[in-house]
Image 1 (cartoon, rainbow, N blue to C red):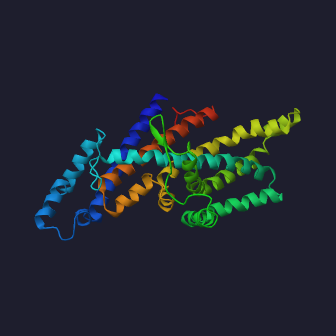
Image 2 (image 1 turned 90 degrees about the vertical axis):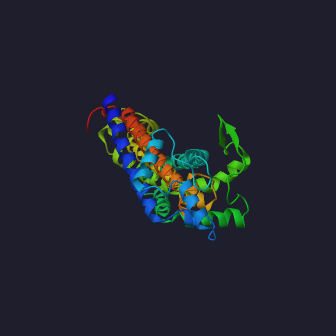
Length: 324
């Protein structure tokens, strides 16, 4: 396990270094943020002073060196727009994104796995076929279109739920959360449902495939031959085996929920990291963009590590210290 952790940390450090360089260079060559941040009628002296204050008058390699030195100490520089540490600005938005992602994944697990098991056990029944039709829709419909339809139906026509914002929040262990208030929960339902649709469809298809495959295995036949009730055969033996690929894939997908919640957060005006980075890209706020991507990559790395450890717990044949 120790060797595995050391190897993964070393690989992660290289990935973060390469990613920071690519993003830094890419944002540098996209355009000059000064042209966006200062007034068009600014004098040459004001323009030069703004360039100097932001450190943009230095060569690219020197700017990257300063950034890298600060990043090693947790300092990603100050945001060009907010004039605050970029890491602080992102961490202020992180709880909203994590709350949305956790809620979406919870919806996907609660609905996707049971529906997938029903679809696998009743593959030729109309129930199973309709569940699979729903999963195809979940894969096919664009997220932005589904979000707009949810707003039109439940906010505009029915007036049941709010169309945007986060609503009222309360502090939980020093972190603002909205799911503990009625207003916050009402604001959370639509964006979480929109974000969960694709993952629910994925969970359905993974679970259905696992159920159909494992139902043909010898251990299921032996369990039935021993007289075990069907609920025990399915709920204990089959469920334990199908959860290995399901946990692996959904764990990886949780990272994508955090990273690619941009569309959902933009449509529903959810004040998370995704909306922040979209706003930052429009004004070329380089510290925010680079810090966001590095934090996202770090989250992917941590989630992958947790998934590997869970995989070894679910399947004792897997040993993390050995090459697969």
